[in-house]
Image 1 (cartoon, helix red, strand yellow):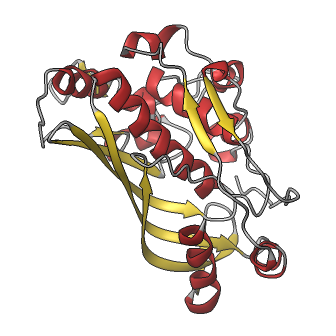
Image 2: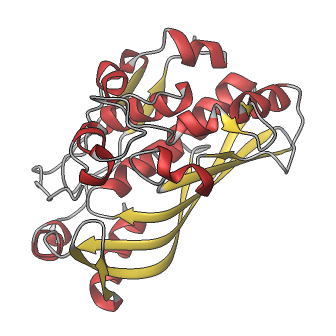
Length: 283
C-alpha cells in the first residue's frame, strides 16, 4: 500500500500534463516507477483505501494464461474488463480484422500463447517457460510477452502490462514484469494483484519457492477526470491492515490453469477496505 500511495502522491506533486490522443483526455504523468511485491512473505498488494475488485483481476490473469481473445470468455471467468475495449472502441469497431461482438483480436494472452513466427506458425511462450522451470532450467532468453508491434493492427488494444520474465535462483522463483503504461487510480491495483498472483501460481505449478515480483512501470499517470478523487479522497484515507491470498494447493500444472481452475480456487483472507471510489474509466 505504501508503495502505491507514494506513487500516487509523486504523480500529484511532480507529474506533468500530457495529452492522450486515444482517449482525448489529459494525463498527469511521471516516468519510471518500480514496485516490489514480496510473495515469499505473503505480502499481497491489495489496495485498502478503497474497495478493489481483486477477483476480476485474477479472472483476467487466468484469461491471459489461457490465451483468450473474446470478452465473452473473460466474462465467463468473472471479469468484464474487456467489454468496453472489444465493443466500444471506435477504431476497433471500424477495423476490418474485427470478427464481431466481443472479439478482442490478437492481444495479450492470445499473442503470448500463440506468438507469430516470421517464417510461419507460432510459439507458445508460456509452455516453454513452464516446461523449463519444471526441469530446474533458468533460461534467461524466455519471456512471456504480449508485445508484438507487427500485430497491433490485429487487436483492440496495445498491451500495457506487456512482459513477464521469470528467473530461478537456488530453487526460488522471481518475476520481473514490465508495463509501458499504467492508469494508476484504476488499472494499477489490478496489475499489482496480477504480478503477485502470477508469480505465486508459476512457483506452485513448477515446484519452486516464490520470491519477489518486481514491477517496472514506464509511464504512470492519473487522468484529469480522476485527479480530484485521488487527491481529495483516496489520499486522505489511512491504509488498513493488508489481507492474505490463499491459492488452492491442488493447482499443480499449467493444464489445471487452462481447464478447471475458477475464482473459487482463490481466497483473500481478512480483506478490510474503505468505501469504493468510482473513478472514470477511459476507453
